[in-house]
Image (cartoon, rainbow over all chains, first blue to last red):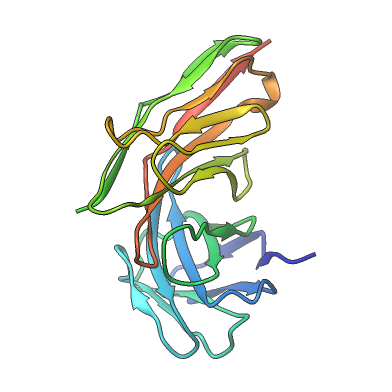
Length: 114
Length: 111
């Protein structure tokens, strides 16, 4: 079945440590996204990528980095510069630009600080 | 710019009650509109969508009609179940890559 796989489901970060969240899709979608969700809050866009080797900052990109070397993969690194990383991180993909393009989501990664 | 406004939650109902979750939007042009559902600890799932004025999206007993004159896309269900307890997000898509999201409305259904 096609879908989006996020791993790990739970992740713990020590102070000063960078951690990388994995996102893989087999939907052949061009666009991919990373969102952050805090408890009881909506979604905030961190980064998005329209095509391979290209990505743009979203609303809250500071302290995060991404890469898009393959169409299927869009890993997110939470760097030590992100002082409040505890949140639920969601990866999504969509076929491409234009109206009538819903996004498909993975099951999320919950990141906590040790 | 484009925006989506949802009614604040939580919305608490008894089983078999009628549900309405309000969503209004501001947009230039002719966006598509979506409702997503998020069950506890999970990602978001597309519930329904509408791509033009007067379209009605429907799925799993939920319905929403794209009303351009009132810039609204309210979510309704005639008889809710405990299993409908979740957070519901309204969103719009214009010609860009991004979806514009509402803040989400938590729905609690009591037996």
